[in-house]
Image 1 (cartoon, rainbow, N blue to C red):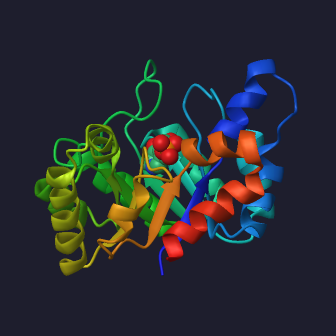
Image 2: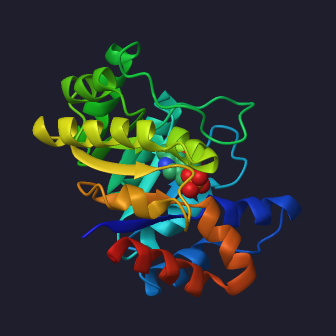
Length: 238
Ligand code: PXP
């Protein structure tokens, strides 16, 4: 049964807008877990625009499900991850100017650097996932660099959904799920998923965890986090 990994970055975005203490991502994680999230995801960015080191340190002690740390494969982040030991690290590309993560990690071009990062993290007992576009070369190379999981970047699918022309994107995603599972990689998915576009992806099967943030936190502002999380969990479980 697919799991929801609740991404709480944008709770921190609202807090950072005033630089104070509220809302606290630590409280959001606890409410999210009580409402059915089976993992908590945070992205510690180099520029610390939302999640702070303090959040990661406290969440490591309070998350009761699984903590998934999204991060760039930099020396600084690898050092932090090894010290904190989240259950899983998802390596993502990171550009300073972007509004959110744009595009998947290019595992093919960066294979040597990613192999080293994967090894350091796995030696510390951390499960490693690579955020990649649904593309055969990226999936095959993810296996070669010894990752445990891929997280399929669903951004292109989410954009196509708005135009109604999703078939092509769904086929890419389905083929990547099959390939990844055949070669022994676990499969997660995320980016741009919401209450309207999740069903068609969930119907493909084969995805263990969905990392979803913006749509849930947006709904939470109107109806509360508990309901926003349980609404999404219902869609994933049905
Ligand atoms: N997965 C990864 C790797 C991401 O970088 C993000 C965005 O932080 C998400 C999932 C969640 O995307 P969204 O906020 O669009 O649900």
